[in-house]
Length: 92
Ligand SMILES: [Zn+2]
Image 1 (cartoon, rainbow, N blue to C red):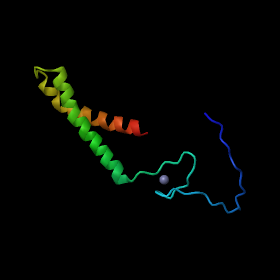
Image 2: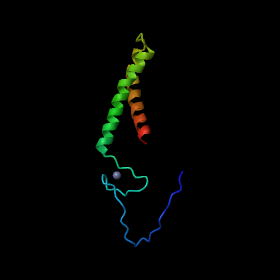
Image 3: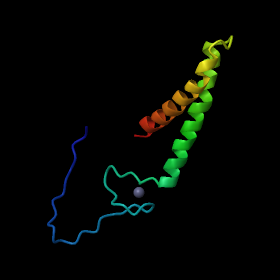
Image 4: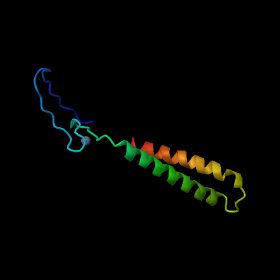
């Protein structure tokens, strides 16, 4: 980790800190724009849909004879949560 340089400024001194042109937050070294709630909701929904669609494909791959008919719904439910979990994990 690279050494960081800090500047000590008196609290009474007016300091103009650069702000982000997108979110108007303080532009610190590790600034990340806040994501809009609608966009986050859309990402979660897409991840859930993708997980729910991929899970039955995995079931079909592991069970080509379609003998495990009772786990289809459970696979979709697990796929939804795994999809959401992976999405959150990769975006953290
Ligand atoms: Zn920003």
